[in-house]
Image (cartoon, rainbow over all chains, first blue to last red; front, top):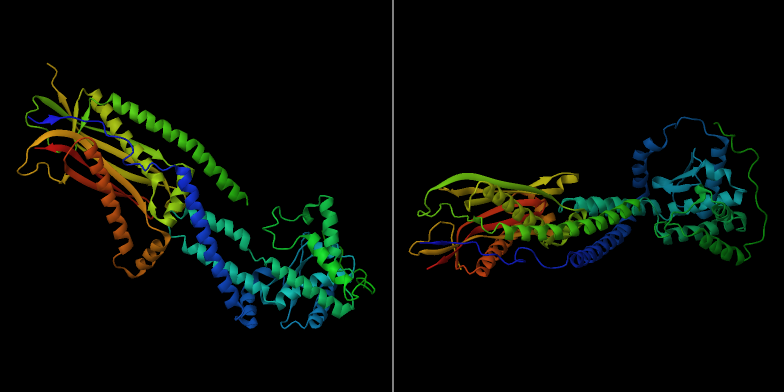
Length: 286
Length: 150
Length: 104
């Protein structure tokens, strides 16, 4: 006669007794370190390889994007744009910029200017409206031209693409939830933004350009002084991102200090400010 | 930045609530397993020949248990490293024991004392982004033997 | 420990049925393996990494089931069944269960 029983089975055989939080932080650290190292290596590689991309290819790349950028392309150039183009070309010559540049106006109240692929520079109307003189505007233009001379847009694009590819290759792994989260985080950081050192280098080259063009660098800090003052008044348009880490531009105060140091040395502080032409900005249409 | 904060908040909430729910569930499973000790389960296909006059009936119990956000993130990290996914092991353990308990309750309601040929089926129910796991279903079933009460 | 997936052990008599014992494990391979498997999906062929993953997992599930059987004083597990389910993409759950018995 067989005996049928169900003795109690001890706990903890099918469940690993490790504390979940301990395991969690261990895994977080391991993945974080591995990912940081991998991406740093990839970025270094991309930065190196991207400098071999000829400027002509960069221009062709930009042409594909132009369709989105310049919809009202047939509009006749405004006096402001003609003035900006000629100032830009003079500055590019003073800087001995190796690549042709093209300046575009953005009809936006934001205070913004950026350089992008193919030698295109965008300047917002909001920025032009707060310019006190030509020297301040020239500083902004020379800074963006310096980015193009340094090939910063293609370097940033290469970096963004590399990181995107690295993240995408993780998409097939596990649930894909992690990759999805990571991708959304990294897209913030790697948007076409230049590194801090690239910004500082562009500032320095811009100052040298101004010295070449005007013989002095007075007024170069006007925009940053204005932004600092507006921040004090709580103007949202002049706000910097909350975290300085995510903001690739050096802080306004640091840039003013750099400009002042440059202006103070080599007798760059003696000269006349050049005024902007009268009524160069057409009155607002709205 | 915001999505990172949301991620951290959800993970913390998931851990806080998930671990309390899990601890309570395990305590409840252990207590009920003790109460239902008199219902015996065997995966053997045939009952003993000398069992005497019995009725038999198919009984089953199922449960769907959801993961919490902490488990989701922990499992995703584990997916990158490889190895034992302990976040999901506790999940399937809970589901399986709960399903067996529910099957035992069904057998008890019929007046049975033994369940033979017990089988277990596990299914993962996908939802959300890219088939990420939402919950696990376990179905336990077997043949309950009901002794004649005479 | 004697393990079989038939009901009776030939030549031996079962003296005690000790009920069901179970072993389960959920396992994942590291990302490198997953990426290689993704590439392999293009060309076909055996996914060695995953074969290995499932073998390891099955061994662990069996070991855990045996551990349960030992804990309640059995010396054999009969009528053993395995079931596999994919709990999430890239992670596999292996489950082994059977009836713990005492053989003569």
